[in-house]
Length: 66
Image (cartoon, rainbow, N blue to C red):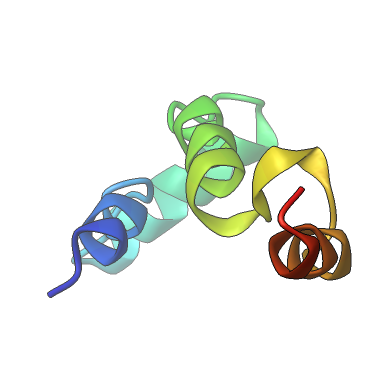
């Protein structure tokens, strides 16, 4: 499996029972999401286009060698 997929998978809690899932939902509603910062960092480093630009800007920069 790709490393970034494992990283993404590990950013989330995994419930194996209805009680675990309900407990997670209640914690999130109460504002206790322990992995929210981890997910934000994963999205920033693995999913968003690099250099703070959008995909089109990055493609143009790559073509022009900027």
